Length: 142
Image 1 (cartoon, helix red, strand yellow):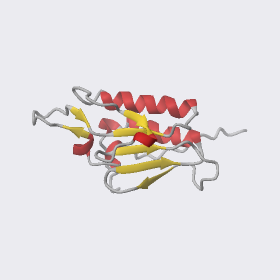
Image 2 (spheres, helix red, strand yellow):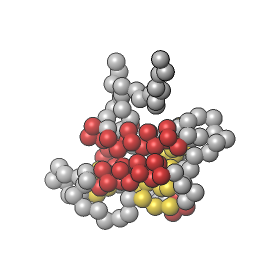
Image 3 (cartoon, helix red, strand yellow):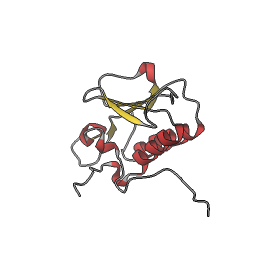
């Protein structure tokens, strides 16, 4: 009997809140209890050509936009135009010379980069960021 092997997904989802402080991502600038500004930027490598990764990037951007009352600046920008003054998730094109299917590199409190050698696994990571409950999870201790 042939077994179907797919991507293994941890029982703990990875959310945007695992990468950046939520108050910096979903900003409540007027103090009414509702986030009215999106602080996170998605900086995308212009060499990215994988349709699955683009689909998950669009999914993530749409879900981020749905969490705030209004948008006053772009969610996604070319990697070369990534701002330094707000949280930024940089997404690179898959590189076959990489050592892992997908990995996050922390470049300080404002910048995290997603790199890897597998477009499918990188797309699965983006999907997890998009669909995580409330997009604000913290991995439990259990």
